[in-house]
Length: 145
Image (tube, rainbow, N blue to C red):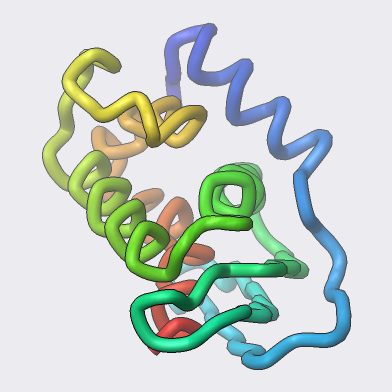
């Protein structure tokens, strides 16, 4: 899979030095997700503070066995949602999924709040890898529901 040098550098940085990796306690919810296409596996733990519309992602930790795309995407996701309201985390999931499905090539076409997640926009050109990039995000959605 060919990526621009800039996007490849962002993805490799998260792959080589993932943020928030390693399962921690205490947690409210633990979910496990597997990508049946390639066998990537992820366990995600989430701890919330507050409730209802005031709920905030207080802690998020994970372990992932898989390709660089799934590992880097989980790292980016953790950094984006940690400390933010659940509603914002869900909105970020929707925007990230759109980024992968719309095959946009220009970073400027996406909100700045996606941060390093914009580096994954080229993954959309490789449909088999979209599920890899979404693995952590789908686990997050399950944990928050």
